[in-house]
Length: 467
Ligand code: GLU
Image (cartoon, rainbow, N blue to C red; front, side, top):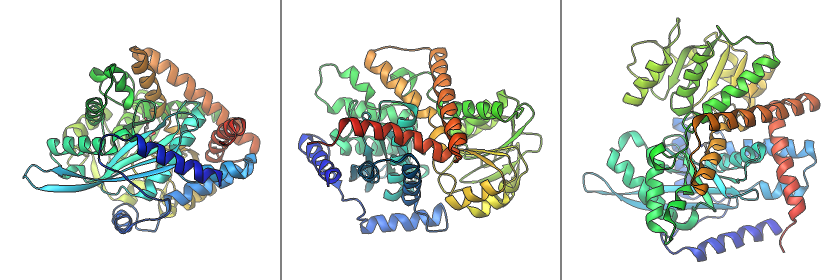
């Protein structure tokens, strides 16, 4: 099959080019090793008590959308598996002098539209299945937004809360070294995701720049996006994912004659996406009345001060111990009567039991894959609208693209320029998705998949399959 030989060629080419880094273990798709099975059980215990197969769920949407647009079968097949699955094991010296072996991943789903692109997740639940799903979603996001990138995702299986800053730096740098030439400004460009941040992106950039022989080292800054402003980051990148979601929300509000001022929201996850969503909502007069993260949930009837809570979380690492709210259970959180729910944590958080409890009008998916198909079906039955991840959280990768362009051109755009471009792109794409959904009578999620797949399908059709 053409798709398979292309996959093998690609692996061979990357392998033979490698001059640095630890040798990666490139495993065949669909062959989980023992560690992988262990990963899954750890993840099941920590994230979702059921047997959630995220990658299968994403493939289900692919099949549904492919059927609607009549995507050629060979294109569907090529898009149904990642091109490369890179797994590395690498040693890191811990503060107490001991040595620990970590497991890192980079899943490169597709590079038809441009270099592989997507975040790096540092979390104890990181698993091959999740990263395959997340890498695939990056391909859809970039194709939907018309960004010249493909899709990838990676990460390290680690509980960052248990590492000192120095240990985290050594894990990040040694992982970058292990990836070697499997990343690069024109090949695969990582970015922040759950558990990673701008400082870690700078460590990746610095490690990579020290590894490559290049006369113009500065141009290599584009190997990673989401960096600090001092080191080649873009203004507006930090809030970009939330900002993009808010642009979708305001368009949806316009379409549905939904006055935002005075409304209420509940936000799950208070990292980058959750905290900026809450801040941006408060600017629109929407108050956040319940929040939650891995440490628990809390409510504030009069509404949280988004600035104070964000500052607290930045300082303390979580919402635990914040005095401006009353503790509630996870069930009470989901049952809170509000207008908007922003999931901004991990996948599979809104399953049937949570959807049963939910009393909002709209879910804006800041996270990737927060709704299970059963959860989403129940939401539809209850008349709760969903702005899907592939559209709603694509502001992050969109501004990553702006950062990459600035790095390659040695330019610095101001915040107004970045904001203006992001707003235009988000709103135009929202319109296209909303139009397709109402014309074909499908959900916004399926519409977003259809538009992304149509762009990919057209490109495959015109290029054909080599040789
Ligand atoms: N991790 C983010 C996402 O899931 C951003 C990816 C990027 O900027 O490349 O979309």
